[in-house]
Picture 1: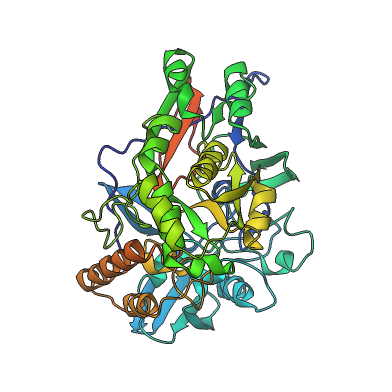
Picture 2: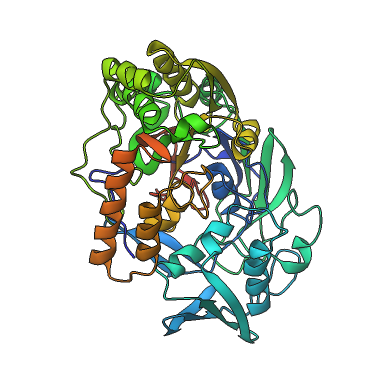
Length: 503
């Protein structure tokens, strides 16, 4: 499965190497410091559902396969898997690399991989990663380093799913301390974790692959845009993510810094909670959508660093329909639709995070104001992401800001949380959409699958169903001008194992 990258996509990200000279003949030691916009909420990679958590954990854990960009496409390459074979339409055989150990000395083998997958699927284990592994109905260990993954039917994108499943050490994972002191096979080990403070990782001297350049990497949690920017300018951190677009001119004028921005493959949207009966009224949903000035948000709050979205799927994914129009903005028609709806003055709870996405707090507040302008009573709440996501998962809001990327490159997985009634978090039900998603999930022909995905996008556009797309999340990163070696990624992961100081 391939993803075509956005035209002109360039991402530059890195960190300044804070150096300390050692005695003559010893290597030069250095640390890296990264300002992250959100707390990972957990370091157990089976529970991570936050981009910052993905980035941090990617230094500590490894999946069977992972993604790399090559010639404008995203391809899979083996990591802990040595090879794989599709034995039948419903059986994928995977061979595991031999001789690898977890940080605590446990061996990496087929049993460890099987444990990771089945622990995610355990009904008593709470994790959103069940979405990625739901097609796997059986895991059979057929040898010390061989296992077979079984599906109920032929399944689109199963190998891509495995890129989102970092393998954990079974014995360590059974400990109640695992969420703060997890054990993986990666080039770094967890040194410490202070919730809402920082995550510190240190080099794994026994790593089986190519070691990271830094001796220590510190991810400091800084939800506020202004705080991250001030820390970068003061030299307290050496890379800062999700900087405010209105600071772009000043960043460009600073010779000590580098800056880059680009739209990403992440779509930011407002999710509708159908537990509120109003959301079942299509006229009310239409009023919500017509009230939102998406282009105005892009131009004024995001500094023109991205573009408004016409679909819950971004350009480059299979079946993306470029012919769909951007959702209209028309406050007059929004008022008319509201008058025709069942709305009767109820307060709509609007929620959004602080620091997780570019200008997320400001966008949430702006959308709340737009709803008020057409006559909807709103109650707006914005919280640091670690607090916000807990309330979001509890469905505490009627209308909530969130962003999502389909890391598996299979749109039906991405849509499963929004449109597919058996698995979505919105309680949105559309039998026609369910049928399309079910058909696409077993369609191995790309052209046929693309047509199904286009049909689904048309339904979502006409029905204002599940979620209202806003724009493609812009990635604006500030960093030191004194570094090199960072490998940019389309999936927004900030992985700094290859970063070194310019000489």
